[in-house]
Length: 300
Image 1 (cartoon, helix red, strand yellow):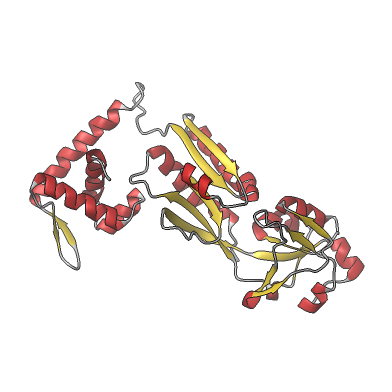
Image 2 (cartoon, rainbow, N blue to C red; image 1 turned 180 degrees about the vertical axis):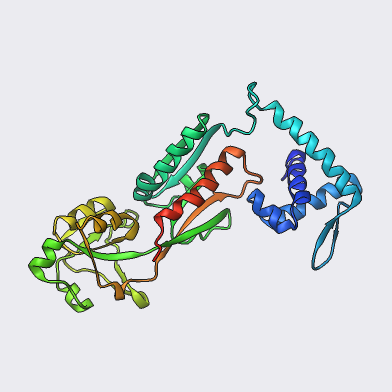
């Protein structure tokens, strides 16, 4: 249920945007929320604010006049919450974020540190977890997730692809040779990452949705970065997220093998709960994560 202030904020955004869909995108809500808010406001006022057709919307003369009054009123309301210095647009307060551990440490944390330098009043609360949790999702303002967001309670933005690479240490390749086929790979020592939710190893994935479940892995762990260190030590071949092994490949500590067998990349998403208009502190962090996390995704 939207309160009157939320309705006025949505109307102001709709009046300034070419379409309700664009207004919804700017606010981070669904177009249906904008449509409902405008309809409720028209019923309250007893006036038509927009002329609507199947192809377009056009604000009425009354709507234009009322929009000017609303913008002035919202500016006064915003001023009540601004600091005495006049820096009323600066985001202030806690923003609760969840992210996978590796992505959080190597990509999300540096982005948040940069934001804190620009906005000293911003207080990130970063929770790292490799197991999606409905309880955590209910408590956060913004989430970062690898894979699909199958929950209509959230607004999600797809940032880019995250491939999985098969990698091995040069020392292991010198000792056992480079695998040239899946059959050769399955005969080599391999590492496995344990699914913390089930306690079982994740299967290796290959192109065409084929899977390989090692019967006798050389090394198992539930931590992605520990697995990568084991692969670097020559313990076995590993299948790891490209964004995590990228620096090791660049430095020559790991070698990418069998690229023709790589599965379709996962997708990186930034998402947030549908809670109406976003406070500025959340919008600033959300937009920055969407823009800067593209550095984590793969670009050929």
